[in-house]
Image (cartoon, rainbow, N blue to C red):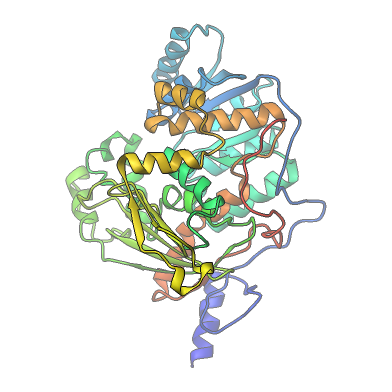
Length: 459
């Protein structure tokens, strides 16, 4: 009976392709790479003197991106698009205030964005629309020969993820997700300390998106985000939490996520919020108030990822890094905890007690292990221009810097895939009684080709 039940699960999920097929893990299909297609691990393309950028979606995130991009060296906003023409005009005025008078505009129709993708005046398509339109826009932009940067989450299903991977590999164009949290100052400092061995070997990490959206649901056009949470179960917004900790663990740069299991609460608040906002009862609200996903990597590390946008808890991305000789935590207080005298390698008798670093001591410790991105000049500009405290600006700066110099990006299409796949894989686990699910190797066998995460710099 047990084998029969597992066979049914495999049929529902897709073709079984786990390298280690067991009765206790749900496997999903990993399609073969199409003939003539090659991996884009480490992809570097021809340098672009001035990166001409077309922005699709000019609401809250898109309009702020338009303003921010005018401060980025070697970048120029050359095209704007939104279904609502008043939003296009608003961004035109943003550019005019920055001394930019010439820009192509598209809008007023459902498919206006296609014209922007086709424009010869655009090198990079920057997508800030609702989640359901991310993938068709990104695919068409790459077909048109453009690089793509797409807001989080870039994709919501495995089918969409594989389509983006295949198009990037086929066209040899970058497809990067705009995950800003990897450029938070604490996260960047901690990454530098991890790479210097300060925490020993990292064995466990945690990340989350805890953000009560009660004040914001109405700001999403046609309530698309609340509708999405109504219709889908699982961690539908995992990337802020998982992105920074994946870099710490060198995911697809020496390690990979292997299996996950998810568990969630019932939807206690969701139906109530939906009825309050829409006036309509919603007995079938899908998304839980709290979703928890536990992941094990190929090298025996673990990851805990959480999602909660429906309870009145303080904003929290969790971000905790546990090493054999130390700990880093960002919420609720930034601190490090390190062995005071020695590491595990020195032997039991030499072990020191732990010491907690916070406040001024924390700052001094971080200064001993500077992240190469955090130059005083860039940090000063980032804080002045802003965007979630400056991390949005650094994200845009790095994207343009790498395209301008023809370097591999900090985040590639496989990062996009790994961070977004949590949405559907968590749903599969939840709908099958919290069974473990195998995480596909989106690199198709090249997850250990690169030795550790590194930033690329021009000589």
